[in-house]
Every structure is written in structure tokens, then in C-alpha cells.
Amino acid sequence: MEETKTRKEKKKDAKGFDMKRILFNLKAEFNKIIWPDRESLIKRTIAVFASSVSLGVIIAVVDMIVKFGLGFLIS
Image 1 (cartoon, rainbow, N blue to C red):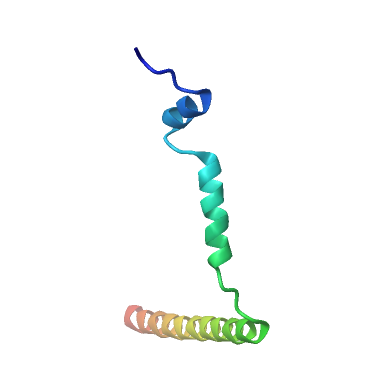
Image 2 (image 1 turned 135 degrees about the vertical axis):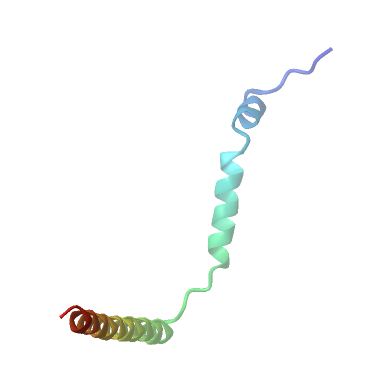
């Protein structure tokens, strides 16, 4: 005799996952996050901003050099 599955078991088999378990695991993972303190966050933000501006300046300078070089070769 075949055992009948409950509605929840059928739903779980059909989708291949259990939403309640996923949300529980997601909450557990979020609880493991160690958020930085304010001072550390400010230092990291300044570092990212400074490196982004520096990289932008480097790219702009290289672009101007290439543009000048191509203009010199073409003219």
C-alpha cells in the first residue's frame, strides 16, 4: 500500500526547496555578519573614494596621451 504524502511534502517535492527553511537559513547567515564600526566605515569609504578618483585621473591622462599621439601620427 502506497503512503500518501501531505500537502506540504507534495509542495516541497514539486518545487525542490522549502521556503521556510531557506528564510530560516538566510536569517541565520545575516546574524553572522559583523558590521564595521563608524570609524572603520569612514576610513574605508575615504580609501575607496580616493582610489576611484586616482584611477579616474590616471585613465584621463592616458586617454589624453593616446589622443595626442594619434593626432600627431595622423597630422
